[in-house]
Image (cartoon, rainbow, N blue to C red; front, side, top):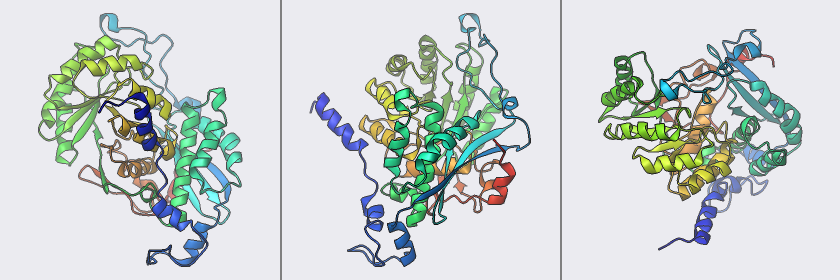
Length: 455
């Protein structure tokens, strides 16, 4: 049957307007009664106290942004950041040696994050996190000066209504991307975590249940030679991973293409290689490189961010020109930007980031919208804590079109399990989705203090 514009919009609308688990959350909120909701016997874990607290308003008392860094040290924030020089060139051969527009700021030797703790008047807390690797004080100030005062006294159970309120505060002034939505992501995650803790349920249950209890992860690899890259790719397969990701930002015809080919040969028949270019190429270059990937016999999982994020028409042409799946989305911040990608049929896979694209509330809409267009999604997990990984996994577990997630190296790192009371589990290249209330992540306060820095 031919689908016209009106019927297509109806379909997309049904997917985008998913309710918040009426069979779980709604039943708990139904009233201040000790008995179980009609038609269901009380579970052993349900106490009268828990039922009353869930039914009563969760009035917000405080919203606390917490800056963390490893190594913690006293180094001033501006001295951490490394940026390209004015007029810096890509360093390529011939016409590929041009002004570099694709290298982001970095903090070499350091990892930073911004956590948010929201606490209710009865002392219950929920935790969230913003994607804030280079300048977390921007996000901190948005929360202390704008979001925090707006949230004080509100009922934390109204997660989506509060999201809309915060998103609208500066929307007409143009603040609906970047640090604004990253700060909003932290607040949104904290509210979901708080709600889950209040009702004694994991976030995946609040989202309507899970399709699976383990989410496959991929591992980032690199190396100084093709042989070293191949060895690391093979080692990842031996450890249970079925996908690795590597950077490729040099011009067409360079030796780096041999690195990708070596990794592809090392994993062939056991897994795949994803290639991430961070927006380094122009369209004609990306088409040429993509066709080289096509010739690697299906060993390339996807070609990620070959063009700058704003080049939607370029992505459409690229997707039509090569067989290798095209992936984009980590730089985007809201469903409206993703809608434009979908309408243009510009991508095969999207990788929104729950700590950048405004949290669980917005990324759930993005995943549903992707599903309406037949697009798969994969959570992007960047510099951050174990909470970042867990929140991404909860949403992936609760969506039917989730594919695989980033972050295979996060838990052993200094901002991973080292900050938690109980470690999260990754086994054979798969992240085990926590069953505990909220995101199932409990920070060790002493460990957290050791990496906390003053803003």
